Length: 253
Image (cartoon, rainbow, N blue to C red; front, side, top):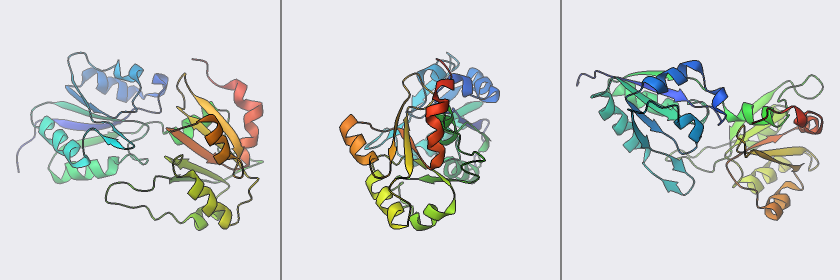
């Protein structure tokens, strides 16, 4: 096995607001030799990167792939063999639907020293900035985080929407806007009422953040009417009713 002089850090960039980046993550960006980043990392966080560092955009967006997953892993291996600090900068948290576990596993198998730096995930931060607490003693004491993406590489998530519907009082769906009509149909067939509130939070924690509030019965037509699009987090449950009271408390950019 080839000796590797460097180390790869899987750093969670958070949802967008640079103030939500961890101190450890910021320090690594400032000292990095190479930074391989995703498409959704905000420009304000990219501006923190060491000016002398090599920056590589490996961003994957729906319908467009800058680099395939295998190419990203191979790139990290190669860079770690010639550089001391290699940062894999991922939006949100690396282990929350970010393939961080897969990348870390591949790096370990290749003999690369690797460490994960958690980040604030959008499924928590976006609702918070929208004035939607995911738990509340009068509304919810349980949360389910689930991916709404219909496929992810070779793995096709077999989401049991029947179980999700009855598993907790608040449901947070990542990457679900494009598949929302199917998801809503599944949840309603499982017994969730059409009048159940739903909120979509787009570009959470960024200055351009916006919300679309409706019910399972109305939200699809609202999306069509407004042109609301990804990237967005969907939150389902009665905690949405707190939005009207708490939205004025959001951070000001």
